Image 1 (cartoon, rainbow, N blue to C red):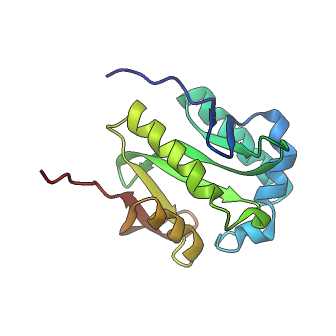
Image 2 (image 1 turned 90 degrees about the vertical axis):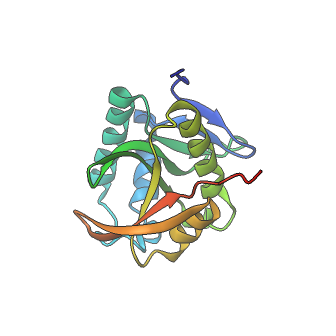
Length: 178
């Protein structure tokens, strides 16, 4: 299997996706602790301390696994509008990539989550075609489920996390007909 380099930094048409670092703590607290971004999070918004700890965990994933969540930035302004990407995940005993996205509410509805997610999915398909990409959503999170559907994912089952029941989404294989 050929290896695709770690996706420390990627560019899409409108976004810069870059490896999270210690300089992202203020943005992480602003995005992750915003009650609006957690409207569908059963655990509610994390405290500033918990958000900073999440950022540190994401940095550890990068260091350990060579993959993780990016800071999603608007290149023209340098504003971090959200976080998202892939990380290794064990889903009911299966090794998968979990696709995560969380954006500032004022940037919702502009297609940024699907744009970031497509870059992550494309990278995973090249670098680790053996590892499926999944999305885990809260059962009541219709906006996140719409993003999953836009990306070609379908609800394939249910599971339970520490936060409670979740829906599991998988990318549907496209079958070519000759």
